[in-house]
Length: 209
Image (cartoon, rainbow, N blue to C red; front, side, top):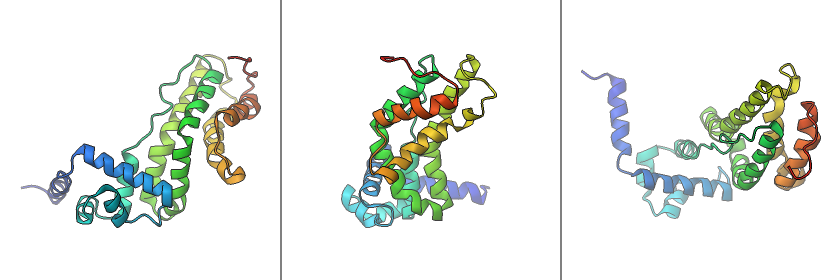
């Protein structure tokens, strides 16, 4: 005899099996685009249905509610943007990260701002936001710092090592609010040279590196 939990899981799987993974990704992309355009409060299931030419009843049958759909859309785009970076030096890693963040920052920063207020009211949404947009980048930057410590490039007891991810990702989120501009590669490179590397007792990056 199946347990109530397994029966519920089977029913959920059956409910969601009618939409192909490709179609689900189209819907998730539309959800994220609408969030960037209008914000969380203005997002409606009707709007998603209209944008994707999908029946509203299908959306409710698949995801149940707007928060569930948004959480699913976030999880569909978990970023591994920085995880493959390994140039052999922390300075090289951070400058490479800056270039990739610049390429992705407009969409990601807009999405973060669109969801920030709603996420404070919803633990599930906040968790999804952290897991998909922040945690992978934090882990990648922490790994860069860890490799630098292992190489002897940075002292293991340097107290600034635990703040590198917060510095780099924090300024990406903060600059649009403070200056009305995204943190592009030039800005991030200057920030790395003037703030991050000195805190780690690392010399400036040689010109042309």
